[in-house]
Image 1 (tube, rainbow, N blue to C red):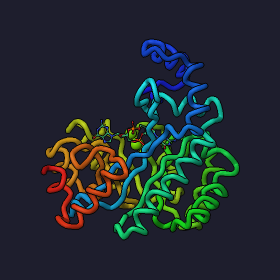
Image 2: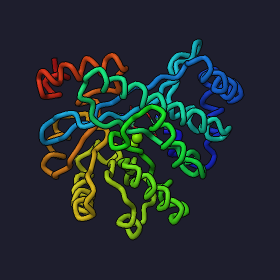
Image 3: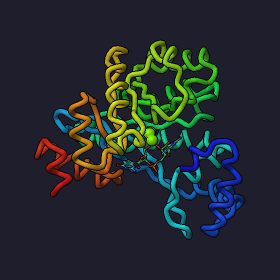
Amino acid sequence: VAKERGGDSIQMYSYELNERGMSLLELENGLRKALEREEFTLVYQPQVDLRTLNIVGVEALIRWCHPERGMISPLDFIPVAEETGLIHSLGEWVLRQACREIGGLRSEGYSIPRVAVNLSGVQFRDAGIVRLVGDVLREQQFPADRMELEITESMAMYKVEQVMEKLEAFKRMGLSLALDDFGTGYSSLGYLHRFPIDTLKIDKSFISTTEHSAIVGAVTAMAESLKMTVLAEGVEKPAQLQTLQELGCDYGQGYLFSKPLTLSELKEVLADHTRYGNISEVSSR
Ligand code: C2E
Ligand code: MG
Ligand code: MG
Ligand code: MG
C-alpha cells in the first residue's frame, strides 16, 4: 500500500506507524539493530505452472519479526531502509539468505525449482549491484540459472541505458529476470522489447476482478510475441485460475495455491508435492 503513495511516503509512514505506536525514529533504530539481532527472516511463496499446477519456483519475501511489535510488513520498512541506506546491507542479506536456504534444500535432495529475489530500486541503482550478486552466488555456490531477480517497471524505466547494461550483465551471468507489479508503473512499451526480461509478473490488482481479463489477455499476447512468460500475482479464487488458464497465462502465484511459507513449511509442501504431483491437492487437504 505504502509504495503506491509515492512522493510523501515518509510522512505517511510516520503517521501510520505512530498510530501503531512506533515512531519513524524507532523504526530506523530498530532496523539498524535488527540485522545483527537476526530479526529478519525469509518466507517463500510457491509459483505454479497454470497448466500442470506444478511448482516452478518460489519467491523469497522478507519478514521482520520485531521482538516487541511482532511482524512488520516489508511495505512498512523497505522504504525506510531505502531512505536510510540500510537497504544495501539488508538486500545483501536477502540474497545470501535465499542462496543459503534454497541451496541447502537442494543439497538435501529437494528438487527445488528457481528462487525469485526482489531487488529494491535503491539497491538496483547501486553501481556495484551486478558484482554483489555475482559475489554472493559464487560465495554460496548457488547456480545462477536457479535464481530470478525481480525488478519493478518503474526501476526499469529510469535511466534506461544504465538499466539495460545491468540487465544484460545479469543475463550473461545466467540469471533470469522478472518485471514485478507489471501494469502499475509507467512502462514504455517501446522499451519493453529491448529489455532482456524473461517474465512479466502481472500485478494482483489486475487479477482480482474479471473486468481486467481483457488486459490480462492483452499482456499475455504481448508477452508471447516478445518471447516472455507471464506470471499472474495474487491468484486467490478458482474462478480467477480458470480465467487465467483460458487466457493462456503461463504461471500463477497466490493464496489459492499457497501463502508465503516458512522454510520448514516449504519443505513439507515440496515433499508432499513430489508425492502427489499436484499442488492443488496439497493445498486443499
Ligand atoms: P511483491 O514482490 O509484489 O510480492 C507479492 C506480495 O503479494 C507479497 O506481499 C505476497 O505476500 C502478497 N501476496 C501473495 N499472494 C497473494 C494473494 O493471493 N493475495 C494478496 N492480496 N496478496 C498476495 P509481501 O510479502 O507483504 O511483500 C510486499 C512487497 O514488499 C513485495 O511485493 C515487494 O515489493 C516487497 N518485498 C518483499 N520482500 C522483499 C525483499 O526481500 N526485498 C525487497 N527489496 N522488497 C521486498
Ligand atoms: Mg516480487
Ligand atoms: Mg509483485
Ligand atoms: Mg504486486
